[in-house]
Image (cartoon, rainbow, N blue to C red):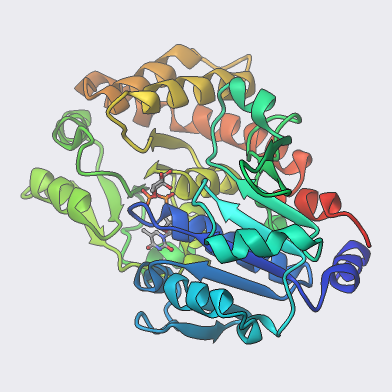
Length: 383
Ligand code: TRH
C-alpha cells in the first residue's frame, strides 16, 4: 500500500465510504460501482456498496449470493438498498460498523434515501459526491466539480464527472494495471479458450439494437478467417445465427466471466466491439482497437457521445498512418447509426494495426492523467 493509501486509511477509517447504486438496466451501473468499490478498498477504505439489484451485481461477482441482503465479499460489504434504507431510517448503522460514513457516493444521480440525506447534514460525512456517467462531450468540463445545493437541507453535493481530459475526473485506474497487462499471456488465454492459431481474434459485447446483420454481412464479405469470441447475450446469439454455416469463422461462446477476468478477454484479442461505459473504458485501458456500441437512447444522444469521443481519440491517430482517421470514424459512426457498409467492416479489419498504434498512444495519455478514485479521496476535507 502506498503512502497516500495509508493516509486515506488513517483519515477516513473506520467510517469509510458508502456507495449507492440503482441499476437502470444492463450491467454498467453495477459494473462501475463494483469497480469503484474495489478501488476504494485497495486504497485502504472500508467500503459498503448499497445496490437495488444484488442479483445483477452477482452476475459480475460470482461469489455473491444473488438473493443476499447483506454480504461481505472480498472485503466489501454489499447491502440490498431496501434493507439498508429501512435500517438507517430506524437509526441502525450496525451494518456499516455503527459509524456514519465519511464519504458518500450517489452514483449516476440515483437519489439517496431520505434518511441518508438527512444524516448528511450534521457534519459527520465529509464529502457527498455524485459520480456521473462518462462522456467526452465538452459540457462535461463545465459541470465537473460543481457544488449542488440541496433544495431543503443544509448540505452540498459535489458533481464529479469521469472523463478524458485534465478538467474532468479521469477514469478508474488500478495500481499495477500496467504490470498486469505486461504479465498477461494473450496466446495462452486464446489457446485455453478455443481460438485457432494463425487467425486474428475479435471480441463482441454489443446490444441487440446494433446493426448486427450488417456487421455479419461485412465480416462475410471481408472473407478473412477469424476467431470470434462472443459474450453471452441476445446480440451474440444474433451474430452467431447470421454467421452460421460459414466455416471461415471460429465462433466461440464465452461464459459471463467475473469482472476481474473481463480485462483478460480484452487483452487477448486483436479488436473488440464493445458497448456501454465500463467495457468501453476497459478496452481503452487495455490498448485494444475498438468499435464502440454507445448505450442507445431515443434522443440519439449516443451519436453525440460517440462523435465527442472520436474527436478526442483523433489526436492519437499516427501522423504517418497510411489510412486516414476518417476511415475509422466512418465505420464507428455507421456502426452506431445502423448504416454500416460491408466495405467499412473490411476497412476496419484492414486497419487494425494502425488502430492498435493509436490505441496505445491513447492508453498512455489516459494512464498519465491518473486515477479517479485517488482524485476523489484528495478532495475529502481532513478533520
Ligand atoms: O451492460 P452495459 O450495456 O451497461 C450500460 C452502460 O453502462 C450505460 O452507460 C448505462 O447507462 C446502462 O448500462 C444502464 O455495458 P458496460 O457499461 O460495458 O457494463 C458491462 C459490465 O459487465 C462491465 O463492468 C464488464 C462486465 N462484464 C463482466 O464482468 N463479465 C462479462 O463476461 C461481461 C460480458 C461483462
